[in-house]
Length: 399
Image (tube, rainbow, N blue to C red; front, side, top):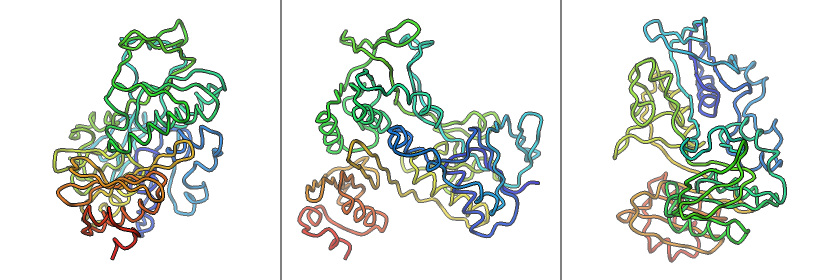
């Protein structure tokens, strides 16, 4: 048995396997997932699932019958311990599993608070990355308790929103000058900040934590200015690091992640990578795109290229976040923009331009703006800031 072996049990892995079968690949396809459950959706973990609005069975991407019908061998709770590149086999303890093509879809791991802060050994401190994380913290969300969230990205803001909706007091601490600095524009951050404050979330920006307080269990945090924030528990959302240990041990090139070429191939022509662990070539160096859309698109592209398509990957980033009753949808990346057009009809939308070209749209409760902006960006259609500003009907921009 050889064929395609996929290490990792997330969205990229599931998408790659499904695409290979859809393209008519008839060899063996094996998914090796370290978690004890089949591939599932991660985004609801910090939103609907944490709120108790989505049952576990709805998280699963595909049912057991799909794997059987499509002859995809799914091995959950399976940890790959090494790669023998010369023999083209993955090691699972003493077992050797051969491959023709190997795909590394190992994802990423959440960052933790530095040990020098005093967090080590204290209970009540959580990261939120996988199903086990969510299940571990679920019982902490009791009305009247104090939550301190560390980090002002999507995960932190979503956790704060859930806490507020469940009747907790939520305070969010972000060390940088503003929330969402890495993933959204200033205008979007301002709108999200005001929304949270209107719901009672206290957001503290541009200030660090010097100490985590508690004996055995966390009781609070001390800020750089000496203030003490009481905490019955803490959710840490300060980013993730790509899982590269397996690739590094096998001698593959590591550069901001598992380095791949424009086709998704690593420095070994028989080994590929997709999803959060993969570092793509970009105009300003290697980049990783941490999103469901990228995991799906890249997983499918790698499947095509394994079968000889020779297609270069052209990322089409899109993101979303549900907070309170609002939905933030983002198409493109606003990095390096030099002009912003704000529209307030049908929700709020922020249109980012660089040298006259539309590069991103952030839409808050504005699904129509998101849909049209996404189509404009992906289609490479020319549209000016003045046209966006003056349009009475955004659909006219598609003409």
